[in-house]
Length: 104
Image 1: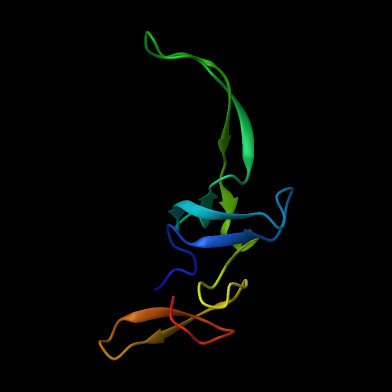
Image 2: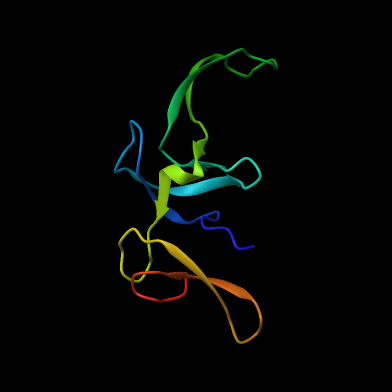
């Protein structure tokens, strides 16, 4: 099965406090249906120093977003799009834009 969103894709956030913000996908967890988008879903963590020389304190980091909260942006038409899958001539499944019908 081909994933709708993969690592290094550019996506736009559809829901939540970061609605409308764009970013690149850093990590994908397909079994949990979660992703991490760079610069979106920032939360504050109180981190304790674990090693000598490592600084503890309050740090901001990205948290997981649900995969249904984002939509990939097509590289050719530069708009948010739905993703269709199609079998290529080699037999591999490829992702394509539902709007302009070009392969990602």
